[in-house]
Image 1 (tube, rainbow, N blue to C red):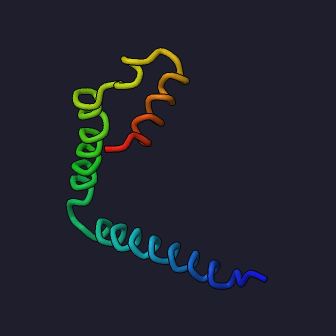
Image 2 (image 1 turned 90 degrees about the horizontal axis):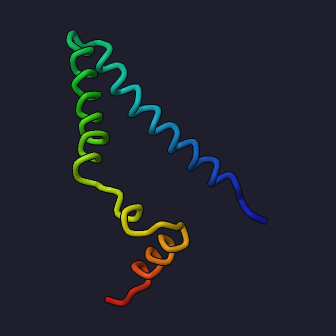
Amino acid sequence: MVNYSFIIQKDRLVRSFFRKVFYLYYDGFKNMRDARKLWLIIFVKLFIMFAILKLFFFHDFLGSRFSTDDEKSDYIIEQLTKQP
């Protein structure tokens, strides 16, 4: 018989940890005078990181070299299992 109490306790600890981290930032920004400016900076920075940099630096490697999903998956498997 498996003891699930440890798993449940671990799950509660993880959720509790993330909740504490969230409220740390939430309360900190809520009580700041220039919180909206900081949130704007954070969102602009995330937009630059994920949208702009992806367009310029991370091209569609598999899509440009292979036409079917089977060819793409064969290439990935070959690269993952290839001996150095």
